[in-house]
Each structure stands twice: as structure tokens, then as C-alpha cells.
Image 1 (cartoon, rainbow, N blue to C red):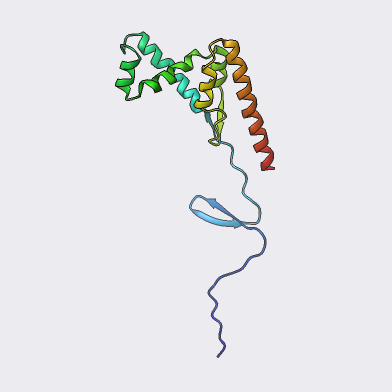
Image 2 (image 1 turned 60 degrees about the horizontal axis):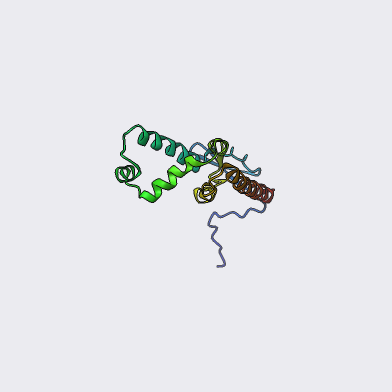
Length: 149
């Protein structure tokens, strides 16, 4: 009378990892290899490239000015100003920004942070502000990498 029904459930001890091979699903005792990090240009690099293109179109006469540009693109005038202010960055800073990578979706610098650099008009002041930001972002990344280990 004391019959137990087995539901087909098995209990494993230890670690098992799901491995997907196409549509098949398998299990392994060894963890799957880590995927290669996904690298892409940072968002501010794309914004900088857009700023150069928009300024060239304003200079070429496609738009009457910044207000017309904002109206036709559906941006606010303030946003257009923020974008075009990126052109005022020192050329070497612009060059560094264009070669920055976002690894696995982590942006090393954001546009808000970069706007703090554009507030400085002399390029020497911009370089000092950029060095501070660049140091902090590298320091934060190396600390984050240390946590993974």
C-alpha cells in the first residue's frame, strides 16, 4: 500500500552546463568556452561623425543654419548645439574618440561626460579634462576586470 510513484525527476550533484549546438541541447560537466567580446564603436564616436556630417551640410547650404537643421531633423536646437559642439574638441581628442571601442555594450565614455570637456575652450584645458576622464574610465575598467577573476 505504500507505493511511491517516480516522476522521472533525477537529482544531480555537482555542476552541469547546458550547451546548445544548433537546435540540439546537451549537458556537459565542463563549462562552455567564453564567447569572444563584442566590440563596436562607442556611441559618442558615431555622434562625432554625425556632427561633422551635419556641419558640412550646413556649410554646404543644405540647411540655412542650426535652427533650420533642428527643425528639419526633428531635433531640439539645444540637441543640435550639443552635437555640433563636439566639433570644437581638440583634434587629437576627436581622433582618440573615433578609435574607442565599446566592449560587450560597456561605453567607456558617455556624451554627458564628454560635454564637460567641450565646455573648456582652450585645447590645453580640454586635453587636461580629457586626461582626467580617460584615466577614470581606464581605472574603472581595470577594477571591473579584476572582479571577473
